[in-house]
Length: 168
Image (cartoon, rainbow, N blue to C red; front, side, top):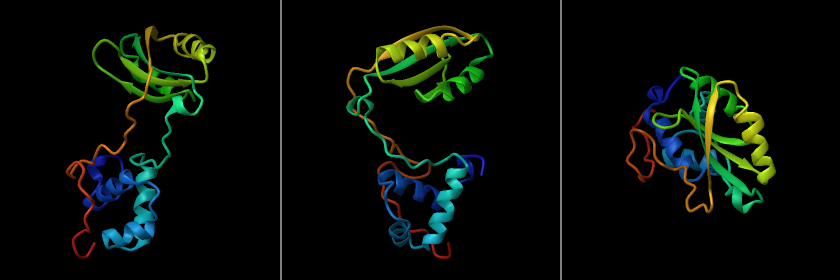
């Protein structure tokens, strides 16, 4: 499975259900969708292996002892954005790295213990990369929403998963 285009309706319903509550048991989900738990287990593993699904606990970094949460806009040399994205994605301090259009070529969210740690990440890891031209840091002062249940293509936003058609 290489992309979300290869997901079928049942895959989408499994993802949607897990976005509502990633702690649900496969047995509970199987009952709701009307299929065997082994099918849920297999499909979930396949989606995870394909990089489509990741089941994690999301915490507010500012509430658990990290003092510096920032978005960093990065301008890079022409044609080097993917290379910089790969390098930034490898850093343990990054939680989000995307290639963008507009003022910045790359945006990265970094989570650091304190200001000294933040300076180290920006100066020694991001800014020191040979393809980085400049950075701009935007500190997060308060977190008002951390949401990851934004919907799955093919399902209406906010809709509850429905059982698949007979014979699935």
